[in-house]
Length: 149
Image 1: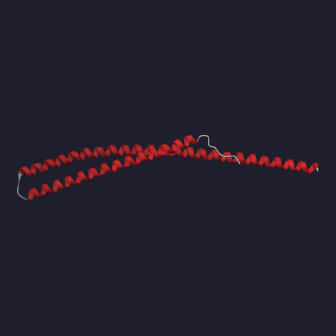
Image 2 (image 1 turned 90 degrees about the vertical axis):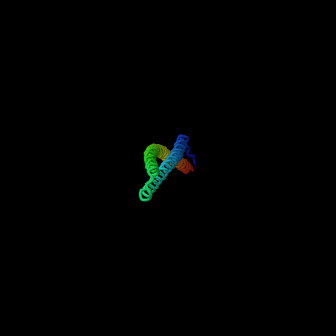
Image 3 (image 1 turned 120 degrees about the vertical axis):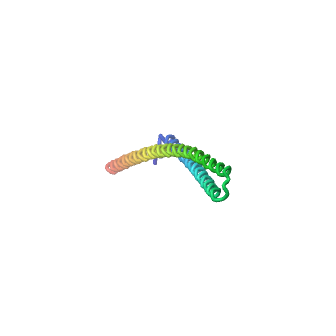
């Protein structure tokens, strides 16, 4: 029996590699988004701590310096939170780009696999037709031999 050789196998292999790379890129982008979210959560936690400290300062002795210092720290935390939100927004945009690239790579690989499957079906039909032709020739030959005898 003949061996099936897909003439565009190298393209299928390339598409598979590109999909693997896109998966890796997506995983990296997803990790970055998680890191940025964790940073934002830590900043919110620090801000809450400063707010708690400010409340404590109001209830304890009124030290204007400490109150101003804590209020300034809260303002700084607000600024850092806004910066971190922007970082998170950029990381999510990069994640979305990586997701789109992954989807495209998967579709291209699936298209190539479908083309390979179609080519294999054509190959099987050709082999089947060839075998049928050989059987017909063999039967004709034997029938001819039987008539001569």
